[in-house]
Length: 199
Image (tube, rainbow, N blue to C red; front, top):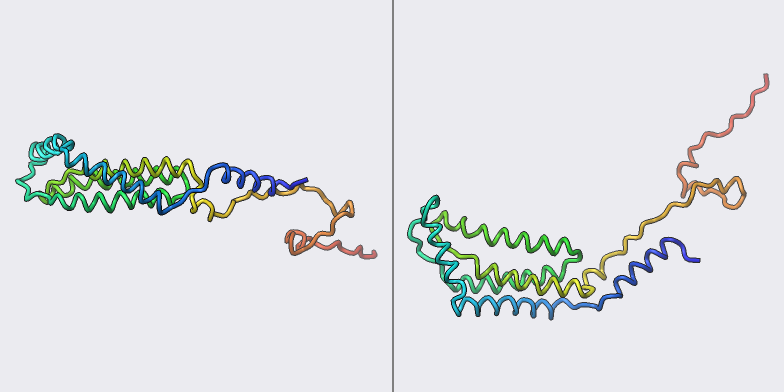
């Protein structure tokens, strides 16, 4: 009969082998390319122009009163999209828990969306829509892949098997087991029986 720890470790290993083994580098490239190419194509055909104009008018109006901006070079958007889409894809695929993968996109969204009003303080207008869409698409692709596969980072983690303590039984009274003081430190410091003193 298997012990409890062996039974739990068998369940953990069977749950890991239930999903197909995933790779890291090739899915990272695919997810990064999907997010990068999609958002650049949408930018080239002008899908973000309406949001960009509305955002610029919002910053120049009340309560921000942004002065005329020197402009943001469009090439920087392409560099940011390239770096962040591949970076988010790699980070998600190399992370072992779902809640951590969700935290990655939440952190990325906060940083990307709040960078625009921060740059506006220096009268530099930057619309985060293009970068945001690319990062979001890359994250969605990487998240779906990582949920359907067992990633290499999950295989490297030690299986945390909860040790179950034996039921408190005094086996020494039965004579079945001799207590080892090294394994049971509390038995080491038990007071000795005092010899009865003659009156």
